Length: 177
Image 1 (cartoon, rainbow, N blue to C red):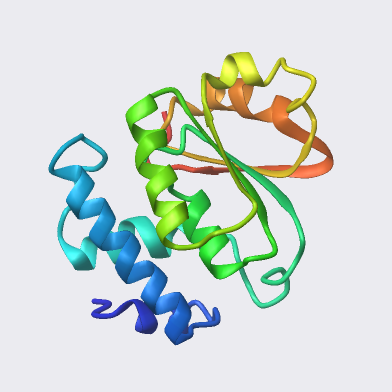
Image 2: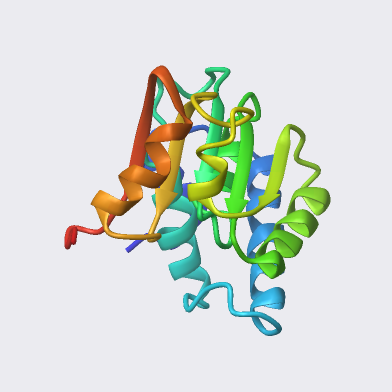
């Protein structure tokens, strides 16, 4: 079992520093604090937060793509997963976090401010609406989403955001429905 976030990053061969550690610790604390007021996640234990939220979120990164400059949209971001962990690891990413619930966007606003993350855009809205908006349609190198809808529906929400040559990464369990 992974006991520390650093151990997990080492296993994934991803960079890890004191600054990255500090950001994830603060993110975890804000998540736990806000989760008492609003329902952000059912995962509350530190080790589970590290594994299921932070480490799972960065699985698409590897030594070859870690420093790329990309535009990324996280559809149905919820507590900021996987978008914010990707941004913490790769500050070159320009991230858009989209969620339909205002209280989650308020939480993410505090997280991005407290973690001093730049190039993060927060949008309160629905994917089916923003995917048709010319300002967002076919504008992103990468679209990520986790636990939003069945894969066929999720694809309809997410693919409109992806530009030619980009890709859509669906974070799904092994029980894809």
